[in-house]
Amino acid sequence: MASETSTYNFPTKIRFGAGVRTELLSELTALGIQRPLLVTDKDVAALSWFSAIEDSLSVLKVGTFSSFWGNPVVSQVVAGQSAYQSHGADGIIAVGGGAPMDVAKAIALMAHHPGHLFDYEDGASTRPIDQPIPPILAIPTTAGTGSEVGRSAVISDDETHAKKIVFDPRLLPQVVLADPELLLGLPAKITAATGMDALTHLIEAFLAKGSNPLCDGIALEGIYLVSQHLKDSVLFAQQLASGESVDEADHLRSRAGMLNASMMGAIAFQKGLGVTHSCAHALSTVCDTHHGLANGVMLPATMRFNQSAAPEKFLRMARIVNPAATSGTDFIDWIVELSSGIGIPPTLSELGVSSEQVEQLINVAIDDGCHPLNPKPVNRDDFAAIYQDALAA
Image 1 (cartoon, rainbow, N blue to C red):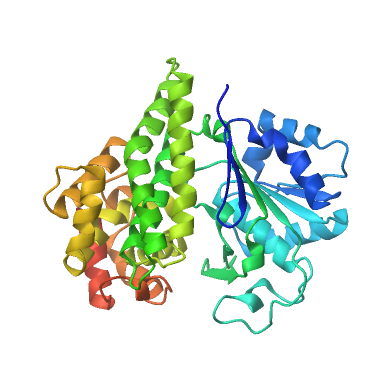
Image 2 (image 1 turned 45 degrees about the vertical axis):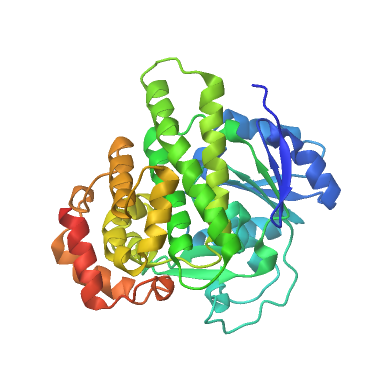
C-alpha cells in the first residue's frame, strides 16, 4: 500500500509511514548494533509480519524474547534480562504495544545495573542509574500508550500488582519506526481501548497543573486527531471482522492519525497526568482491568469532577471537537458519545466492578503519583464519589 513517509525528531528520530518497518536493518547498522534482541509478546510473535522482520535481519545475530503476555510484571523483565545476557545482545528492538515497550525498556535498564528493578523506582530509588543502557529501537503496533516516545517504563509487582515507574532519559528509544500498516489488523476492542488511553493522555496533559505551552499545543492537536480518526478506526476493524470490504486507503489514514495522536499523548504528558490515571491504575491493580479500558470507562466521571476547576480549558477542548460548542459540558458529552460509539462500557458495573471494591480501589488510587497534578485536589471522599459516579453513570 503506497503512502508518503516522513521523518521528525521529538527528540527521538521518528520514521513515519506505511512500510517504514523495512528500514529496521539500515537503522540498526547506522547504530552499530550487530546482536539485537527482539522483545515482543507471544501474540505479536505469532504474526506473519513479525517473522518477516526476523528474516529481514538474517545478516545479523538476532535473538527473540517473546515468552510473555498481559500487563508487564517484574518476572518478565527478569526472564528478558536473562535472554539478553544469554544472547550477548548489544541492543534491543521493542515491537508491540505498551507492555512489550515497557518490558523492553526495563530489560535495557537492568542489562548492566545490579539488584532488583524496583531499586530504581522513580522518586524512590535506592540505587543510582549510572551504568550503560543499550540502545533501543521501537516499532509500535497499537495507538495507545505512546511508550515508543517515552522515557519511562511501568512495571507491576508479580504478587501485589502494584505499579512502579522507572525513569531515565536514556530509556527513550533512539529510533521509532511508526508504521500504520501494522495497526490494520487490530481488533475493534483493542483499537477502542488503546484509543481511549491515548485520548486520556492528551486530555489529562492539557488539564495538568503547571505551565507548558508546548505540551498544551501538542495535546490539543492530538485531541483533534482522535476526534477525526478513532471512531473510523474502530468501524473499519468491525467491518473487517464481519467480512466486509473496506477502503484500504481510508483505513490506513485513520490508523495513521491515531498512531500520531498516541505519540503526541505520550509527549504531552511529560507535563503531567491526573485523577483519571490514578483511578485507572487502581482498577488495574485491584481488578486487573486493561489500562486503556479503565481510562475509557473512568473518563466521563473524572471529567465531571474536574470541569469546575478548569472551565476555560474544557471549553477549548470542546471547540476542538465541535467548533459550535458553547460550554465545557459539550466536551464531556462528546466523550460519552464517542465511548458509546466505539463500544466502551458506560459503567464500571459492566466491567464486573462492585461497590464493595471501592474502598480497596481508593486505597490504591490515593497513593498513586498521578493525581497531585490534577487541576482539582482529590481526597478520599472525592475518589469515593468519582468511583460511585462511574459505577452507576
